[in-house]
Image 1 (cartoon, helix red, strand yellow):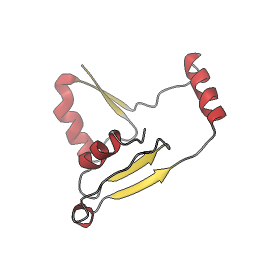
Image 2: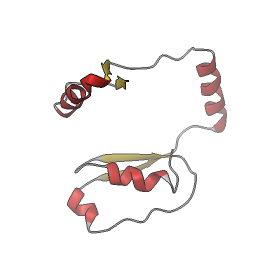
Image 3: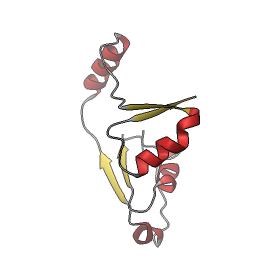
Length: 100
C-alpha cells in the first residue's frame, strides 16, 4: 500500500529502469532526490481503481478460500540464488515464492 512510510523504501528498492506502481490514497508526501530520477530512469505510476465495496467483497471471497494464488514457481531458501538468476534472465513468468 502507498503511504508516507512505505513509499521512500519502495523508491529506494527500484533498480535502474525499474517501475513502481503506487496503489492507494493514504496521504503523506514523498521527497525525491531529483538528479537520481533521470540517472536511474525509473517509472513512477499511481493507480486507484475500484470501490470500497469491491474490497469488502474481495476480502469475503478470500476468507471463503474462493481465490487462487497465481504462483508459477516455488523455491526453497537454499534455491534463492537460482531463483534470482531465473528472475533476472526472464525465465519466471508470473509470481515466484521462496519458502524458508
